[in-house]
Amino acid sequence: MASPKNKRKGKGRTKPKKQGAKKKVPKPKGPSMAQLADPHTLYEIAVQDAEHDVQFLRDAYKRVRRRLPRRLREDFCGTAAVCAEWVKQGADFHAEGFDLDGPTLEWGRERNLAPLGGAARRVILHQKDVREEGLHRGDVTCAHNFSYQVFHHRSQMMEYFESVHRHLDDEGVFVLDMYGGWEATEELEEERWIDGTKAKYVWDQVSYSPVTGRQDCAIHFRFKDGSELRNAFYYEWRHWTMPELREILREVGFARVDAWFEVLDDEGDGTGEFRPSDEGMNCESWLGYLVAYK
Image (cartoon, rainbow, N blue to C red; front, side):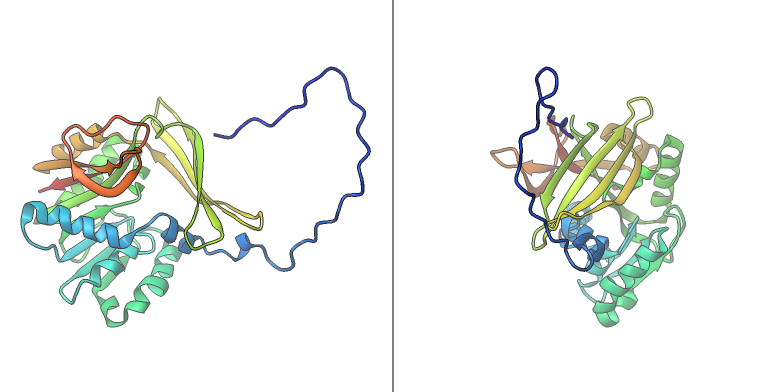
C-alpha cells in the first residue's frame, strides 16, 4: 500500500537553514529505459513460465486420462507463449490460440512462433472472441493469467464455460488458474526485481468493490534510471471465487472439477509445485488451478 508522505511536525513556520549550492544532476542523454523497454518481453520474463504451464497441463490431463494430450487450445493467449512451448514437444502436437488483440498476436507470431521454424505451422492463432469455435476440438483448453475474469456477470461466465465444454474433445480437460486469500482484494502494490534485467515488476491492485466484485489491477515496470512504464497492462476484472466457478463448471456439464493449490515451504513461500486438495488453504495469498474434466 502507498504510505503517506512524511510531514514536518511543530508549530508555526521555521526559518529555512542556509544550504550550499545544489549540485546539478546531469540529465541522461537519449531515451530513458522505460522508453526503450518492450512490455511484452518484460511480462513474459516476470509473469509467465510457459514450460511450467505446459508441464502442468500434461500432468493434469494424464492424471485421469492416462495418456498424453496432443491438441491444445489457449484462450486469452496474448503472445502465444504457451502455444509455442506446446508444439516444441514433437510433430504430433498442435495448438490454437484465441485473443482479441491483433498487435499482441502479431508480436507473438514474430517473437515466439517464427523462431520455431517449420513447427510454427502447427500453431494457428485466431483474432477472435474466446467463445467462438476453432478448427479442431482440443484435448486441453487453458485460460491462464486470470484473463477469464474479464467476464463480470454469471451469465457471461456460463456462456464462456459452455463454449469451452462444447469445443473440447469427448475426454477433454479445461484448466484455469486462480488466486485468492484475504490479500487478494486489498488495494495494494507489490514490486520485485525481474531476473536478469534492470527493471522491477510492480503488481498494483488499484481498486475493489465488495458490491460488484469488480477489481481493477495494473502492471507497471520501474527501472534503475528512475523512469517508469506505468499501466503497461491494465485489467478491469471481476474477482471470482473458487466455489463460484466450480458451481458454474458443473452446471454446464463438466463431470469432475478438481482444485489444485501451490505447496508452501516451511516459511510459507510458494514452491512452484501444485497438488490436488479438497480443502485448500486459508492464508493471505494463494495460487491455484481448477481442472475440469468432461
